[in-house]
Length: 224
Image 1 (tube, rainbow, N blue to C red):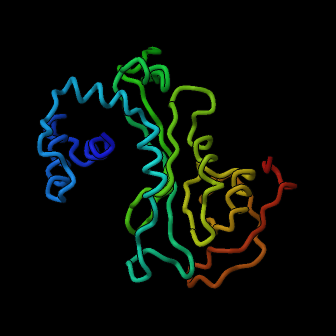
Image 2: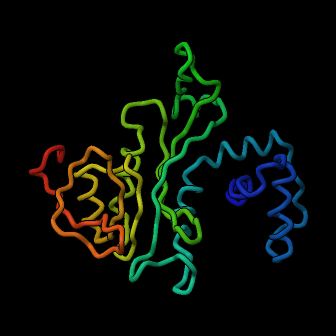
């Protein structure tokens, strides 16, 4: 069922029975499958998925999700740092009782109506060159502390020293920056236009001359 859950992401356009056959054919070719097995009904597959739960799939992801680019992979490194990106996204999940309890319904923005399906939110750290997701945090969309910043805080302590994570301006605040920087990772984050960054020294970045070094500290306005 763990193989089946992963196969669902690879063959999203197929029905349960067809997806279930695909990995078993491969395992049979490898000589590690019981030939007496027969494809279960969609109802049987649903019950097996419910028994499986999410924890085994989460554990597998934690064990195998690693950067895969090598030194000569185009766009994988900037000097000594492996280029990584942080981003968030949302998706609808089936309106099962467990999903409703875990994720809830988000508003549609039209006459205070709620959406037809519960919605989940994920924040991931992925490798820029390969697009491989390496870290992930998942939570509800419509509850207190369910924003992208809250999910990202679960990931910052797990950054690696040789990474250069790139993040959009939504993720920046002083406390989170310090938490991420404490891992030893180099950070490249956008900030909002109203953040005051004093010019300490111009940088030699060609004819535009629009880059400069600056310093950010808790004593400055908006740091807390």
